[in-house]
Image 1 (cartoon, one colour):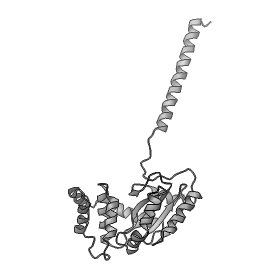
Image 2 (cartoon, helix red, strand yellow):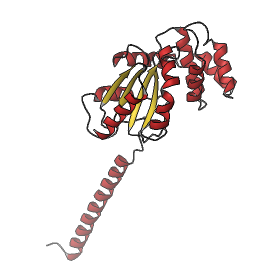
Image 3 (cartoon, helix red, strand yellow):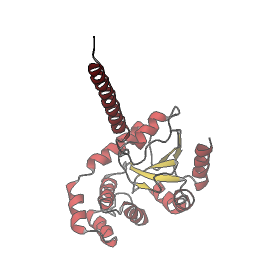
Image 4 (cartoon, one colour):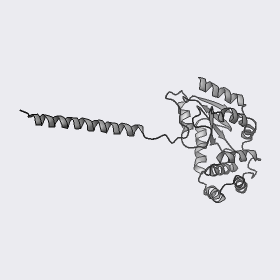
Length: 238
């Protein structure tokens, strides 16, 4: 027969085994929970998605310049070309109110994807904007480009002019020049163009207004501010 001592030892072994098992499960659970936040700048919000979820997922994947609060419930993805005159018109006439009433108010955030379809000056302008972004000045450079927009492929976005814009912003010119000369953003420019084509962009500006569950409203051209407000309102309340 099993002695009392043996029974005690057996019971202690059982308790130790159970305790180790619990500790192991707690560790696994903790690691599974604490993987840290996603590195995507603007992840989809919520768990249910609409029929537009694939488009929204494509548009929000990767890294790109974003203006506004990361917690804003709506993302407005702009596909633009710095040489596009319609884009320039929208920048001057409609964007200021959109920034004031939607972006600065925390109702939406603005994301940029270049769609460079007007020629070589478009591409180098985008490269320069991304180079400025390395020093935290993408949106300031964006403003300068649209504010100084010239005739398409006339040379207004020559490398020399792009360097002058960078100098106006007080950028580290050695760092900016090295980035611009390296053509390190050519692949990103091509990738953004291909993405735009894949989701149906044929002209600039084209906007995709993406709501909390991935529902997406497409806005094409130089549309008035009210169109964007209506889209944001419908996505937040819908």
